[in-house]
Image (tube, rainbow, N blue to C red; front, side, top):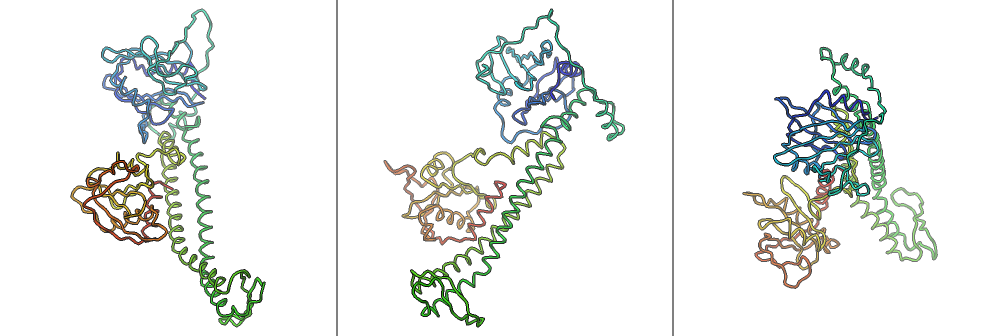
Length: 484
C-alpha cells in the first residue's frame, strides 16, 4: 500500500528539507532513488520509491548500495541538480505529487515526485514545465524529454477527500522491544521500517520469499542435472563390456546366420551362452567396429563427465553461498539488487565486447569466433602490445592475450590461447594445427581483403594439439565467472 496524501504531508513536515543542498544522487534500482541532502551540518538520506503498490518518500539511515551499472536517470540528475539548493518542497494540494523547487547557480528546476501506484514517476522540468528527463519515459502520456508536464491546478473551493494516517504503534512497540534503550521512533523511521520489512513487493520479507523461490528452482535443476550426470557415468563405467562384445563378434563372426539380428556365442570369459545385437546388413568387421566406436566414445566421455560433475557440484556450492548471503543481508535494497542480478536472463546481460573472454591467473584472454567479432576486437578492444594468435593457413577466430607491464606470457597462458585458437577454427576436427603469434602492432590489414583479414609480421610459430583438460579448465573458469 502506497503512502496516502496525509502521510506524505506528515513525512515532509517532519523532515523540512527546505534549504537543504543535494550532495549526491544514487539510484540503486529502476524504481528507487536516493537524494543525499545536507543542511546545517546534518546529513539526510531521502529515499524515494515509485514501485507499484509501494510508493513512498521518507528519510532512512540504511546504506543505499549503488547499482552495478550506473543508471541513466541517476547520471542525468547528477549532471543537472547535484549541488542544487532546495528552495521549497511541498505536496500539491492532496494530489500525492510533491514539487521541489531547486536552484543551482543561475539555473532553476522543478522536481516532481508523483506517488501514484499505477502511474508513479519522477520528473525534472525547467521553470516553464518543459520536461528535461523522467525516471520512467512514457511517450504516450508526453512524459519524455522535451515533453510538457502539466502541474495539477487545485481549486480551493472544492473539498478534497482526506485519508487517515496509519497507526504504527504495534510496529514501534515491537521495534523498541527488540532494541531496548532506543528512543521513540519518528514517523519517517516508522515508514522506513514498515516498507523495508513488511510491506510491498520490495520489503525484506517479500524479497526473501522471492529469494527462496529462486533458490529452490535453481537448486532443483542443478540437483537433477547432477543426478543425470552420475547416472550417465554409471552407464559409461561398463564401457569395457562394449569392447568385449566387439571382440566376441570378431572371434565368432563366422557363426552369424544370414538375416539374423543377433550373434549367439559362448562368452569365453564367463562360459555362458549370450546374444549380441548386430546389423545383418553390415559385415562382421563393421558390426565389431560399432561396438569399438561406442567403447572409445564412452571412455573419452568419462573424463568429460568427471569435469561436468565437478562443475555442477561447484555450481551448487556457489548457489548455496549466494542464498546464504541473501538471507544474511538486512538491507532490502541490497537484496533486491542481488536478486535482480541473479534472475536477469543471460540474453539481457550486456557485454562490453564481442566474443568470449577468460581470466587466468591475472591474464585476460579475448576470443573472436567469426570475421565480425575478429574485426570488432581488432578495431576497438586490443592495443599494440597485446599478443595475437591464429591458426596458420586455416580459417578461424582470433585470440588475444592482453599485455601486462613487465610480464612475459607464461607457457600455461600460451597453451590456453593456442587451444582456443585451434578450437575456434576449421582445424578443430583434426584436433591439432600450426599457429603463428605476434603482437597486434605487427598486424597489417590486407588491402581490399575480406573483413578482419590481417597480414602478420615478426610472427613466431607454435604447434598445438587440442588438450581436453585445458579446454575443460577454461570452460569451468567461464562458467564460474558468469555464475552459471
